[in-house]
Image 1 (cartoon, one colour):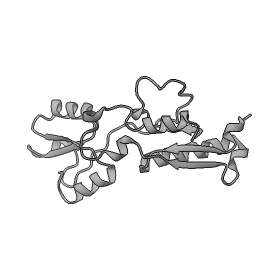
Image 2 (cartoon, rainbow, N blue to C red):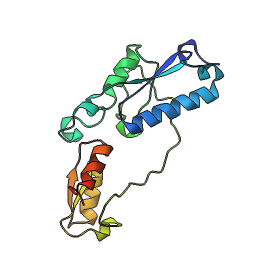
Image 3 (cartoon, helix red, strand yellow):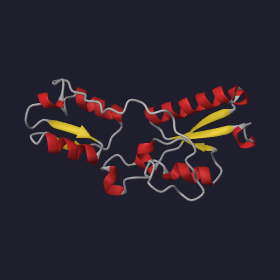
Length: 172
């Protein structure tokens, strides 16, 4: 049995390829589990720009870290503007906002980090002084601990922009 609120659900998501893929996967799973949601227009994906989406000029840790990709979405949920919020767990703060719950999770995908380089097959093959970019302070610390000769930069850009910077050889 599905609640009346889900019969014309608005599923929210932030404006990124990963977030949209998660929203569409959530929509598809809801439609498979509840035939009444398979009707055209029964589920709408609503894109909400969050603080984390808008601030592209400084590391997210400098402006507050967790919750930057969830605050506006959670507010829309609490205000009744949307029925379901889809978040990446990496973005969810330790403590959820009052009146919200975390009722389910999608199955975890491959958790390994990706290494992308035009000149090396692995981090150990990078020459001393190479610049490695990451969006994670934790990953930066791990890299510097293991590869002391690398320069690790914190990135505050979307993946597509980072890949473009690799192609123009800003990062090795």
